[in-house]
Length: 332
Image (tube, one colour):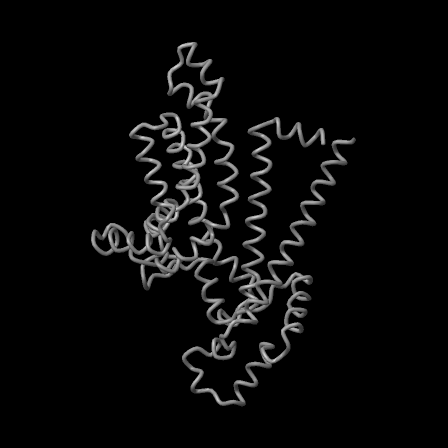
């Protein structure tokens, strides 16, 4: 009974913390949008702003609520949110929920593929480097990780695009499918072909952090008494690393993989821009440049919720990988 009470209290505190985080994210995002020098009417009109009369501009401002004070706009948006509505996107001319649903379906496969690939490669490279600390293999892997971690996302994406798409012609230059072909007519193989280079580019950026932290954990384990005892029994370095050290080194990898979801999403925004991939990241940039406040606020809340759930999952997996953590929290 006491355990159930503690679990209920823990879940309630997490939900309350999540609610406060979402409200803070919404308030900060809205405040930044209000401080933007971009005129929302001009952003809405785009190239046609020179062809619109002052009367028409006034009607547009009234239609979308641009002429009301910032506090009134934020209060109106909160009322819509509490009623289950995310608002209406004026740049896509459809409900914000529909925009997020359509765009995230494309971004989800990009994020999931890059996330899995970066996790697997990061753990494998980190264990290989940490198990042979100071060796040539360790220096090569660590050097690669440090160089990759310092590379700007857009720069690496442009290099990959120039090399593999423009010069070699191995991959498409843009989009989620061939230009001029309806999305319903694009085959799965073609979609994967268009997804290949953005996924690899985004995954390379996530590999570095996981590799370095896994390497540090594995190197510390190989110097521990447990590894020394295994060496004394005649176990090889490979057996110690993969049979005993894998579970030990997977702890930071699990935490980082889920905690880096926000960083991965931020990288996907730049990746989608370079590769003209029509995902949620590209919609985020469009919403910011054209002052689509409801869409940008909804994306900010969705991203915060996405990252918070990832951290919650990481916390649960961390306790599963190391039962001592769960016991310590139970005894508190």
